[in-house]
Length: 327
Length: 312
Image (tube, rainbow over the protein chains, first blue to last red):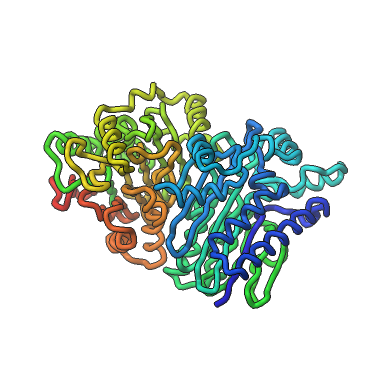
């Protein structure tokens, strides 16, 4: 056993032609967040604290679809959601419909720790945020120019997207190429998440997102749904990303743990098995087990991800083979 | 294969109920079971059957869903529901409704008329208006019994699942009528589940429970259909509805065994569920003192029960 951590910045049809100005900031963001997580684990922080800390960093990073940089609803507004779960106790917290809370994942944790409930949404969640004195900002704080463009493009194409990595192609050729490469769901940067285990086998998971570009107001995806986007128990911790509806239907996060427990599969086998059940192009996940294994699996073109373990292994990737092995 | 149907009006019923509280609920269960049986005999699809039955339960003022929903800490109504089709695994869910007469039907419309699964609060209410579903003033849903329950819960300073005995001294958290649900299978093995609720007495505004969470309060796939009831937080944590199906799939054991196994894994006095399998098995386990429930199968078996001994 040893500690292990994995985090993601979203799975999707991320094209290999992703231009540097879009790729580099995200890689840097992944590297930064991984380092934050590694430092916290080395300092013997509990995985629950580690995943919250890392997801806060991802939320604050404007190039990922969570917190600042969240995609917009069909009304041009931001509605953020998140959840967090502690493996050993199975305590969990979730929030939806936030428009002013700077760190949704931290509010989810407060729901878990300061209320008799698990899940608060919309006005009630915003009111709770104020009661708790968490940092809030004007809704405009979360809106980035890229996301205004994404919404416009989605509305013009009259579709709901998970996300869209290429809104800003100046050259018509690239735009055409991009359009040709992008079928129904488009490239997807959506959602951030982190899973961690310490050297005592304590596990935790957290996920946060702005949702789907051009989603209906009030639409809830998989990120705040325990068992869909987030799950942790004594066996493993999972954070999923992709098309929320597919993850809800597929109870993806829960199934990884269930398959390990009831079919006796390893973490990597279980993760591959579960992602295989989801229609191609729709899902990805990161997971760690109580024994320090790591799995990062996706059935999309790519997934922004990073992982590391106590034995010195570390990786930051977008594409490459869908199953990553520890060394 | 044969058709089967199970209905619940909530787990957490205390060990005894005076007739004036027991009889209307038994009559309600009987009525709703009959509606479901007739629909299955007329070869309606289980998805239509569960929606129809849950609408009836929502309209019944003695169950905690639709009219008769318990109140939030502010004395308001926030209803939620979900529905799932086993073969396709399409599903729909809604939360935070205060004017929609039948949340389960709105959940079905989310499933059928939007690219999404789950809509909540203002967005869900707006969708309801777009769809032209029946809406009324919030006061329609509020019953004197629930005003009383809220008052007692606030005096006792606690959140309850429900409370069937406002005029009795009650121990911590007991007396629960909460949530309604229905599961059904036809003689081709088509399965469906639906659940609906007003939530927990004195819940925080904006609190979402297990009922609209696919995999917690509701789940259906090609193997079985499940609707759960009880303390929402325990059911979410325990991914109860999904676990029933997962255990059948991954361990290959019968519905009855699976249901018992799942109940064993949730804290005592928190949970009940109803489930049917593709082959027409029925299970209705609970670890609370009682659960309002009813079931019937094509071979003529039927049962209406609250505690352990069924009343036919």
